[in-house]
Image (cartoon, rainbow, N blue to C red; front, side, top):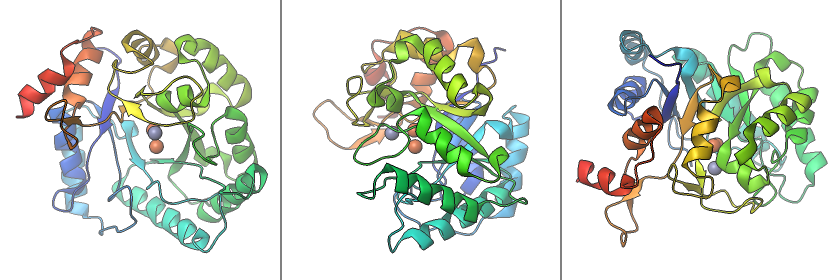
Amino acid sequence: MSDLIIGSHVSFKKEKQLLGCVVETLNYGANAFMFYTGAPQNTNRIPIDIELKEAAFKLMEENNIDKENVVIHAPYIINLANNNQNYDFAIRFLKEEISRSEMLGIKKIVLHPGSHVGLGKEKGIENIINALNLAINEETKSIICLETMAGKGSEIGDNFNDIKKIIDGVKHKDKIMVCLDTCHLNDAGYDISNFDYILDEFDKVIGIEKIACIHVNDSKNDLGSHKDRHENFGLGNLGFENLIKIIYNPRLKGIPKILETPYVTKSDDDKEKIYPPYKFEIDMIKEKKFNSNLLNDIRNYYK
Ligand code: FE
Ligand code: FE
Ligand code: ZN
């Protein structure tokens, strides 16, 4: 068995909750996963069912899925960078997300730092720090993993210095780590074809031990485009070889690699994305061999 820790985004649904996430993960042949505790685009959340959680942990144990390789993603609509009328709500929601993560026994919560929406970066960073200091205390068991962003609009966190400034301002620094996203790095202007250089840079600014999770997405856009549109593994501008090198980089051993690549349409002319690509992308990653028939294989399997 290799050291590969690979998984994808999976869905947390009402009926089966965390247990459903594990079943989906096993269907993809993965040993890690990430989920939203409800719909990513809204903040409606159902109560955590402890029996389902326990059944999920049992199934994880039977299949060698370490809970350290499971990650929660906070909904992307909570914006801690702008202290408008939604700011208090966003902080409260983050606190609730932390208690859900504690109830589920899943420590890592990936969080987009936020968008300042006209306030300016400095004020935005100040708001993020303030919010994190209100949401995190000594007793907090969760780890907030700030995600590096593409720099779309007024997003904060498209460079390591932003993230470093946030960490510096947070009181309980041991509860903050970082999630790298390869698509976002590229779109932010980091050339991921030399990932060791990026890691050196990250180590200098933040410290490599702070990397908690890596989103291994291809990108539809060019270096520095500030767009943030994910592409299927090996089909975008980053390419298969570059992404494989990142996944198997010895400096990133032990860190979960998570796919957030787009679902696939029924045919090239279709718009609706319905088939999950993960089982097939994970197969390619395990074999370190590009499947030039990826989309058709996915379509044939699910149709
Ligand atoms: Fe994200
Ligand atoms: Fe991501
Ligand atoms: Zn993204």
